[in-house]
Image (cartoon, rainbow, N blue to C red):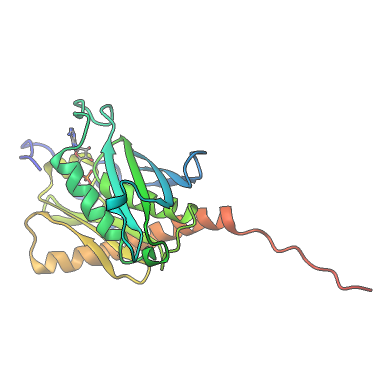
Length: 248
Ligand code: ADP
């Protein structure tokens, strides 16, 4: 978040944002499933100008052995930004930011993945951000959720993620890059299908009333995203039931 150029208006008097959205609208999202043949599950997701690829591997024997847990699988989540994913080249390799995002994203999944079914194994979630335009951690969580389901990892439900923020003094859903850069606050959230929150972060300052309003927007956004995730999974896994004709 940096200081906004004086004459830059992020929301018009008509309530339209720079990309034409209203305050309560998410960016267009497109999901493809099973895009990597060597992964157990995979997903390619576009959300606005974000482009994210996720590969899920496992459950497979955890290496090194000392990383194994006798009573459950270990979940590993690695968020990585391709060096060409941002305007100024991103430095390759882990950074403070990517380590933090990996940790909170893993924790966002832990309540739903039934890890206790697979002792001594690892479930690896590899995220590659190919193009970034703000909201990559939320986009990556949405893609990972679909990739985990594609891998057949037992889960209590899908995880869905979306941010809200404060831009030109208004609470809006799903910030794009300009809004993230010049807005006043950014508040990513992830939740279960039942609306139980599994990730919350906050950058900037918000009042309790603003947070309450923002969480309502996020709930609406997550509902829309869940429908997109479910539709793509249904399309892949729902085999049409053939009508059985009765014996004459
Ligand atoms: P998120 O992508 O989850 O919103 P941040 O708020 O940290 O995470 O980043 C916002 C945006 O800033 C990113 O989506 C990306 O467009 C840009 N960004 C992040 N890291 C870098 C970087 N190292 N170099 C250039 N741009 C970056």
